[in-house]
Image 1: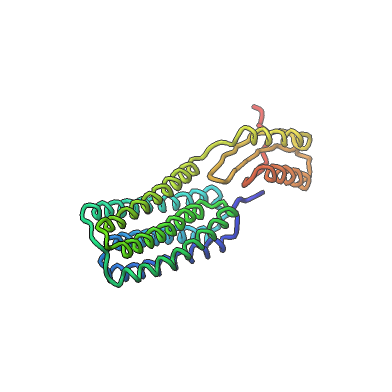
Image 2: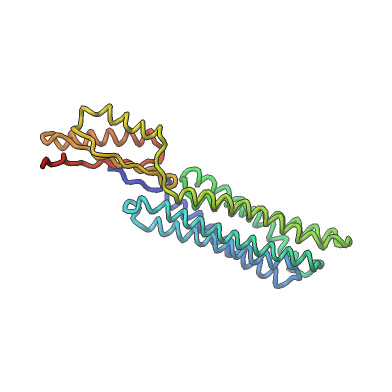
Length: 303
């Protein structure tokens, strides 16, 4: 009997998420200090955006920690749901970031002003540092996501990509505003850059919602996979007495197959176990991310 778990080492996922939490907390504190020491509406939006992103990473870490601390083999059908629900929370938070940035950018467009204060220079330095940090975390989570097929890590890739792009855009916005401050139109650089950041967040949020909603909806297997299962059963037909049913479903990236077989009463337990194990391995080897359970069924009693 095979018990499906989320592929990959839970420890790797948890460490990656915890690194993001620590980096996000530090980023939030630095950004808050820069905002308090500057006169810039963009930095106000940056603080809110960074804080919301920190909450998103924190939620992902808590979800991964809960999964790794639990008994994975008792919750085959629930792990994917938990990760996808966490991804939806991340998506909701990204939408909140989007709204904050759009509102702030609109206000800046209506009432433009030049940026000033030492906090601007603090923010410039922090944007450079965290563009590198967020880029590194994005690549790290991307490698883990490809290996683990984890919705949480997939959402983290999008989140850290958005954070990195936001760092680069804010860096360009602040730098351009300072360098071109002698021109009257330079006051519009910050709100325009904020709207571009909002666009990148919107695209990432759309990707998260479409991916997570799709995986939260259970569906049947593709016809080719169903035919493959029947073919394997036909090849082993001489080893069992009857087929009492097949139940299969796809939940997220995982595939679950339950087969109910009847064996001859005089057949040895060792022979039954050998047959079911061969059949299970053959099906799981050909259907990626599958968990196959073969149960013994009794013949119906005649009445």
